Figure 1 (cartoon, helix red, strand yellow):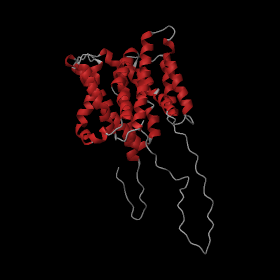
Figure 2: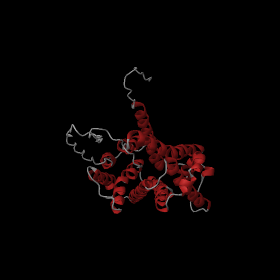
Figure 3: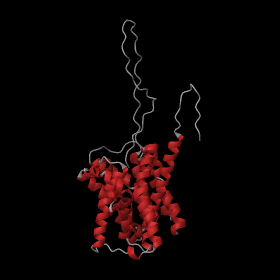
Length: 343
């Protein structure tokens, strides 16, 4: 589209282009998140072991971003230990192994719903424990719907007891709690998305490499099928490890945190739809009930309470004999810029 300008007319910026690009970036991010859940389920039937997938997940972003990370080395090294531990543990090796193990015992729908879905609930608990206030507005309703959705997913495995599924669901809850720590840790650091990727991937790759070299975690990367390596390299390394973080940050800048979180909540639905043709999973009644509850709960939990509009100032009284510069008072109808919040 070519913009035309009329001489003497006021120039109106066209925001449709940037907004469309931000929306496209967000939908690609949702597809990548769905790919993570699908790959967590598919790992059990592939020739790769969890350590192999982790090496690809954390090693590929380091290799691609090495020059940019070198320029940010001082800022990364200056991060305080507390937030750094939250980020490294919350989205690093402990989270990755928990998500992969839970996915192997359950289904892609469980991974795609429980891991991202429970994050707002865990974050609310962490923030309340830190004295940052309790949920307000629609947030308590959203958190209750999330809990109800997870309960709907697992209820049919309680009676009779299915040990594997319940163990897998519990492991996924641990993974979600770890991701909540990662979310809180991101709010406490002053790093751009590339710096955050470096802070996460460098120690995670070192830890998983050490565990593989010492035999604590077995690895079969040298004997794995080339198609499996290529799949996990694209989905985990380039997709989850690199593209998702950068694209989501771009989407938040273009759409705002609230709109981005609403569209991002479609990830569980995308996982369920894609798992049918790709993994042969058939949605159960529990999935058809639990996933919409979790999705709606995430939407409501991410809505920020509206602040009341400031009262209009009383009309000024004009005094002919006195002149003074008028104070600039913003109108309540004036749109305010939206400040992005890391999720």
